[in-house]
Image (cartoon, rainbow, N blue to C red; front, side, top):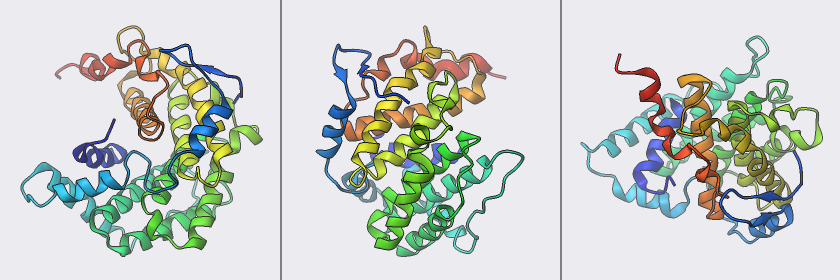
Length: 303
């Protein structure tokens, strides 16, 4: 999933637009335990980038560019232009709207996806410098507003992408600060605090939050393999609660807007599993999921 150069670049524009019991997968009788997951995770190459794409994928993407009229080149130019516009824009601040930090989390996600992709496309360190500035500012927040956990999930995803895709350009001190923020202000919360009601959610919250925290855990897996295993386990145990909504033929009870929101994060979650662990634990075989791509047209109509 999301392996080709074109799909990697399109992924950038998609972003723009609690238990420890064994888990039984959807399509086999294999029982997946935390300890088995941790062994698999510890055996993975400790290299970056690894979320959604690896170094070979990005190299292939760069080598495929150079045809100025191609859709791929136009998309690459748009990413770079957007990243350039961020040069003098100050980092986000911990400013709530009502009870939500979600607007700032989404702004951070948009910025770090653009800056990280621009770095991978060009190798220009100015994009890493700007991304590092953004991530250090976010790492310094008192928290990422866990009382409205979508805020934490999207912020953790933003920090995970930035940390992973720009890893080679970050200095050691910044890596440590960003890594600790991902762990303490994101990954550990459902295991160590009261902020875990979303874990067993059957709506888009389950899809978004499990995706965000899983991204964070997988971004730092070489330093925190136990937390990575627990977080992956938590996701594969609980995200099926949300995915049952697609049965039997791919519709979604929350309507087109929340379908786009929840399903995008659901696809990213499965793509991360597929990229790193070479399995999505049978989740893509859940009833209706393979048909849900047609839902939007059926729900909205031509007018």
